[in-house]
Image (cartoon, rainbow, N blue to C red; front, side, top):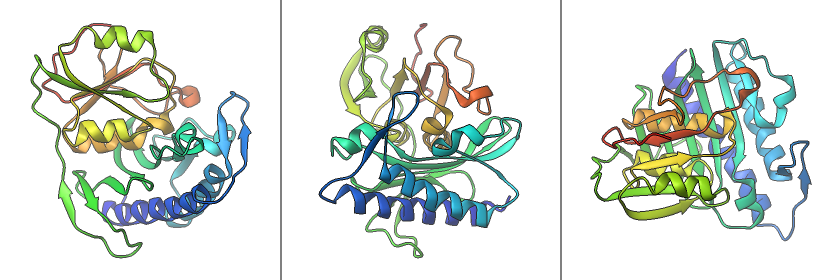
Length: 265
């Protein structure tokens, strides 16, 4: 895999998908459907998926592709694959709250090694560079010209005054019960994979997820966090969160800066 070409392609396709999403987001109305698992899907999800999938298949025809909107056709046996959530945070999109992202990642041997997370409504984009280190690009964004970038890195946490980020749409008693085990200085709520990026930039120290997610929800954010010095582990035994699982469903997990003194579930 040529990681330099990969970085350029993932960035460009994330921007292209985001441009289409914002076109629909800013329209007077858009169609919302319900999938078989009762989750919502919009024309923006489907349009962005079509753009990103076509671009990835053209650029990397020999690499397996997994996308949320084509989940029924996926091959779970590939050791290396690209994985896409074209619009993570569909509920935020529908409510026009802005906390939604475009997510594209490369998984190698169970580990997300490269990825891009683009939040078009917020004008923030995070990705791994050709060396695997994570950066935030400062907008405005151009499809072909990379703008100013700055390296990002996780915090050095103060365990007596932690910064916690949790889900905006999926917050529950189990999450609050786990967070209560820590000495918390401040709590943020965010939608979609932005929570990984807030840990990656040091704006938060820990993000626990006690709820259902799929690998396409987390892979790109996980890659960005890895490239910023962070970690993502299973909630139950604190072993690394792995990818390529049958059905692509994740267990509960914790994303964090390594200085955090993790508590047991």
